[in-house]
Structures are given as C-alpha cells and as structure tokens.
View 1 (tube, one colour):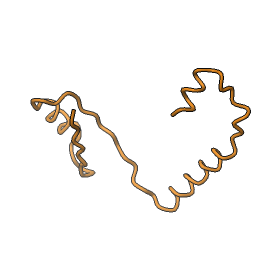
View 2: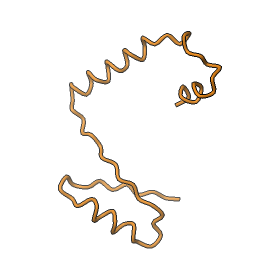
View 3: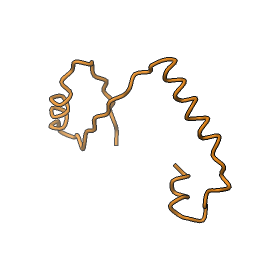
Length: 75
C-alpha cells in the first residue's frame, strides 16, 4: 500500500477535496488531520513542562504486572 500526503491551504475546501479523492479509482480510504502550527516559545515551554512531569514520575509505584499497564507503558 502507498500513501500520499497532501497539505492544503488554509482556505481550501477540505470536505470537497476529500470527497473528490475518495471517489478516485484505487483509493481505499482517506483521513483528515489538522496540524497545529508551531507557536515558538510558547510551544517550547509547554513541551518543557510536559517533560518535567514525565521525569517526576516514580516508576516504582507503577504496577507493571497488570497487562493493561504494560500496554499503556509500551506506547
């Protein structure tokens, strides 16, 4: 299977273009994803705060014998 990624302009009619692509021969499925533009310093500060939270988690308190926990931790 091959995938083609298309980036649209902000004012493009995404619903119309998606329907048009779905109707093309050989297309199995389409998906629509909205990406958030990088906000610079604000974006970096938010990521830094998330990394600090991650580093503050004590792995010894996590029950690793539970298969659901193992699944979540593997992601």
